[in-house]
Length: 119
Image 1 (cartoon, one colour):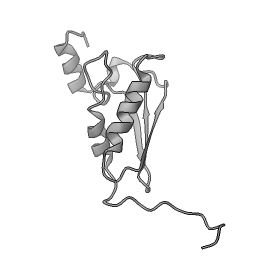
Image 2 (cartoon, rainbow, N blue to C red; image 1 turned 90 degrees about the vertical axis):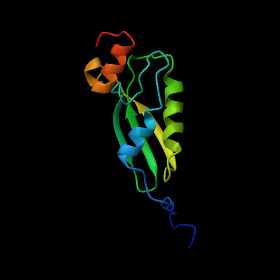
Image 3 (cartoon, rainbow, N blue to C red; image 1 turned 135 degrees about the horizontal axis):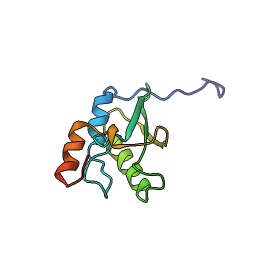
Image 4 (cartoon, helix red, strand yellow; image 1 turned 30 degrees about the vertical axis):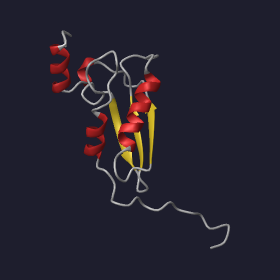
């Protein structure tokens, strides 16, 4: 191999996680101000996994300028980064479409009602 040959990272050993496994791992991530995980809140807009184990997560928050944005990003990266086959995690926050209670799962709405929220 000479210096001009591109180096392709090796595929992760043990296979790649599924989208369902990634979403399940994200259920440990919570907004400290809301007692429901980011998946059931409906904050996860997309998950992409490439062949090299790089996971890109597109998500939103309940409000622009959320003071715990960096904490939620770090928690999400850590939760997904623990999965077998994941080599890197990137979280991108988007604001379109805006989040609303209609994006919550039924389980998320039930949890919110248990804590006294009217959803």
